[in-house]
Image (cartoon, rainbow, N blue to C red; front, top):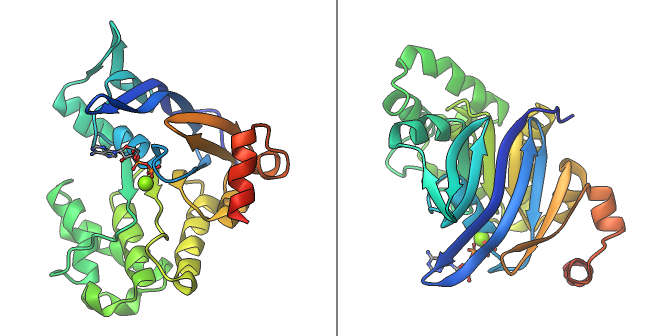
Length: 255
Ligand code: ADP
Ligand code: MG
């Protein structure tokens, strides 16, 4: 169950690439332990939205607040970011998992998990090791801890990528189509790992084409098209009783 603490607040986010607007005044809020599914056609701005949230892209205008701290604030119709040190601290609350698994190919599974906690968070290896091993047990891949990523299936690699993100102890997880690069039979394990995370009250934004996951793991679903949020509702309402024509025709095409 989500509780009332706001973890992410985005207000009136504008973003253009070379004067082409891609986000046109997006606002959204994510509460603690909420799972927010974001769906919509290709090119609607879903990835850009997530990338703006973790500063892989900068916004032109709008306000972003993470756990009561401003990351960027709208001043005279321009986004003004907090200084780099504050950005780094705020971004430490979030981890992102991409469509491509991006594991370090020259490191073993375990080394992949240990890398960021040791080199970014400056944790001692003795401190991280039990956490990493526990995460690998949890995703059922402890036996593969000394294997290199290339020896794992795509689904296993993606579960390791999730465990690697979790090893940083984030409060918020962002997923950008984590199963889109996988064969259908390999998506199940990844979705199960994400469902388990949701059950453990992780706050999550999940961009996905998996309507089943959005339907039964999300607390809220957002439909984006053309740089706007067209509709937002809890999954039962969203899927059984969509209000907007564009949502209806999108859902019809998904069946
Ligand atoms: P989605 O994830 O919903 O498919 P994206 O956020 O990737 O959509 O892209 C939204 C729009 O922004 C698309 O028209 C895309 O071509 C454009 N876009 C995304 N990233 C860039 C970029 N770095 N430079 C220029 N255009 C981009
Ligand atoms: Mg995308």
